[in-house]
Image 1 (tube, rainbow, N blue to C red):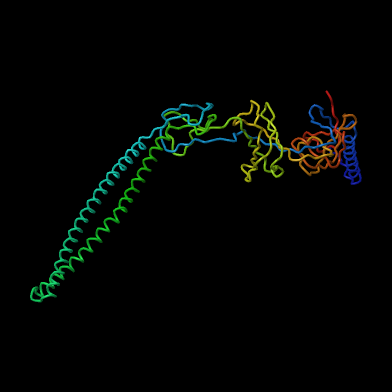
Image 2 (cartoon, rainbow, N blue to C red):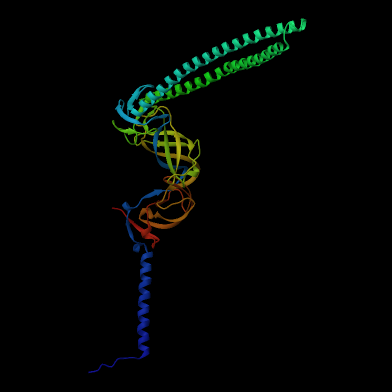
Length: 422
């Protein structure tokens, strides 16, 4: 049997109108339920972190991790490569200047010393031989010069006699003999001048040759001393008085070390400083002279900023904090610490604890507790300067207001919540 459907447009429009009216009424009811106190969502009070707005002094601080390091530290490095034969002092040992720490060995250095000593001995022998040869040359040249001078004087006498006889009576001396005596005298005069000049050269250059050989001996002696110092450096000693500090990679006996490698380090106890790493976004407020509090987990030490690293490394800026000489027993080299630097004191301001997502000079919404803490309403707050755990309030709150500082992002769709106490 066929069922006749009513397809008249008037009835269909009435049904759609009634449906729309029902949906709108339901939506209005839901919104009204959310706005009514009895319809606000409920949250456990134990799940929120709250703070009371106060009026007074706000101390701005920046914080960073750091390490205690000695103010005076001396690295001990290997001057020459070698093998560690014996370690006499371990880290933590008190040492004085000159105390033996370890012994190294290197056969090549010993061989170099022997070769340098051999060269030095050969240079000394060469100097002795040179002095002997120069003296013999000088004596031989002096003898030659003396012989030529005697021949010259004899030739001069002979020529003068022949000249005198020839002048008195030309028949007594032949003209040829007179000329021969004069030529012989001239030849001997030239030879005498040559031999005397040769003697002057020998005497003048002898000292230069001796000086050159002595300089060679000096250089070889320096080489011997250098080799001796290298051997002596393999007996590693403490340069200053202090305490031996450990290395990142400890050394073992029998290990081969290269020239320039760190063997140990000596720190002067009692004089420590803190190296604090401040985030680069907060470092612009740090200045030399500011007070810093160093937390060693068991004690708090007050210091003062003395240096700020101009470079940024791994997103942080390193600052040096000078510490007083009378440090507590908990202060030790390489101890991990936390540093709080007081950058500013703001007097007569309204402040509260720092919200989870609170940033400096930012406008944000918070929940303020009302009706004796049974409800919390959303308010708009403008923040000012921030510190580690506190923030300045410029608008939106008054002293005595209690606000929720924890993350309330799950209630972004509500302006009012109910707080339930267990």
